[in-house]
Amino acid sequence: MNLLIPALALCVTGSGPGNTAFPLLKVGQGPRAAAMGESFTGLSDDASAIYWNPAGLGQLTGYQFSLSHHEWFADIKDEVAHIALPAGPGALGLGVVYSGEPGVLYWDPDLMQYESFRSWSATLSAGYGLGLSDKLGLGAAVTGLYQDLRLQQGYGCALDIGAVGSPLQNLGVGMAARHLGAMWFDGNAELLPMEAAAGVSYATGMFRVTMDAVLPVPFDRIPDFKTGVEFSPVRDLALRLGYRTGPIDLSSLGYLYGLSAGIGINVGSFGFDYAVVPYGDLGMTHRLGIRAALPPAAHSQSSVVTQARTDSHLNTNAASEPAQESGVEALSAGAGRHPAETSRLPELTCGLTGGIYAAGDSQPTGGIAVLRSPSYSQQTVAPDQGTFEISGVPAAAAVLAAHGPSEAYLPQTCTLQLRPGETVRHDFYLWKKGDPLGPDIVNFASNRSEIRDEDVPVLDRIGRILGHDRSIGKVELAGHTDSAEGDPQTKSELSLARAQAVQYYLVEKCGIAAERLVLKGYGDEEPLRSNSRPSGRAWNRRAEVRILE
Image (cartoon, rainbow, N blue to C red; front, side, top):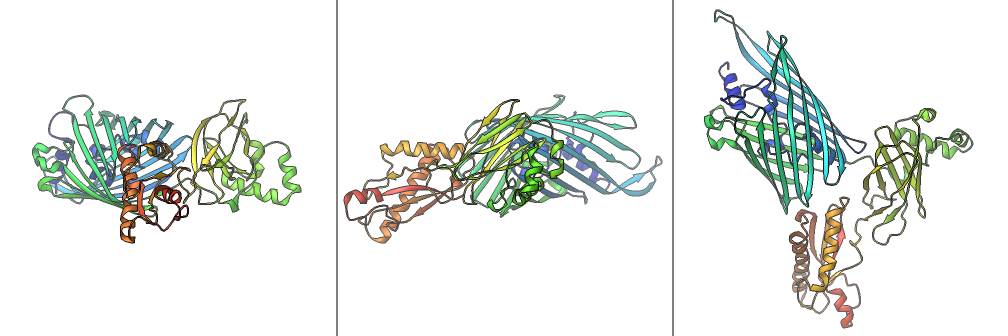
């Protein structure tokens, strides 16, 4: 076993110049990224972003938690935990890593073996990613390091900074500077394995492709190149493959050992990931992980509470109206305050107003508006026929979310910059599950499934909605026929072909991911108008786009 530890160091750090302290930092975190060749700088779309690119935290809109176990050779094991928590206009990330190396042999100066011992290392990271807009995010993370080598203990600190962007639809780019810092052993400083990374990711259909270039700092060896692909034949299954040229020493192991592979399975809000990474004659290494993703806290209409006010009327209203009092108590629990603490809120200098409407017909629906900033949290009712108001809000960047009157409505979120003395208005237009995506439909000639020129603007508008409205997950492409277009089998095939024609246009012309589009052929089962007249049959030869989630 004492021979395997140096071998591991050689595989991870290479044999040339540039070797540095704390090689654990060179081990990529998480089975998903490992399976994709550790090319994650431009993607960074889960809680492990705190390691790969902290700016990626700003892309996350919900709570995420993951645990992973890395099984190496020589009984070396890593335990990794990542957490992402929405906070203000971005998200806070936390990361913990423990790596233990048992059975390390200790020799005295006379080369007499004393005993074996456990060497171990640990890191603790905290970071924040800020989404400046839909196309740009920045982030930073700080990591504390500790290493126990029996006769020596080392302490260190590292800084990671990064940026992510989306210059084109379905294209992500990222840059990160990682592990900027040093370790101290007995007062002597040693540099960490600092590196600069740039990456891209591109999603098309069922595939996502990633590529990274990683340059060591100082620039004393050639960059490492990494690439990966994630293939999702169905929604809850992902097959992954990757290749990397470093930091492993492929000249010693063989170039086939740059390959990696893995799988991911989703079950509701939970996911399971596995990756296998070969290391030549040393054997295979395995990484197992579980994760959970939860959306930001939503509130049903039964828990709707009245708007909290911080003026002198709050206590008198609560005392004279029991229903109002129970609402304020519920609000205080949701906002993390007790009603008695209301008078101690910071100075409030802004106002916020808006409405919640149905996206289909722009009619008010009512619902709940939830405002969050780093120092403030509030929710209020939007009446069925009116607008919501939130007064006395601290001037800061904030996140405003809208929830409809029932779970059938898809919630929406936006970021706002609230300035002193201003009253900001923001209206929400919520889509409803099962509703068509807009009033227009795509019509077809009799017994044909080709898209007509006059229907191209309709599809372009639907493509723009799907491309820009992140609240819409999946939609159904429903194809229909009239009653005169053949026998039932022919009608079924023709209606499905019409749905497929719409799918092809949205994917190829509008760049919509194919996994968001569910195809269904209804034949003549759902006529819009009577089939007894030619004008009615023309209406029934159609395709519709319906919201599923």
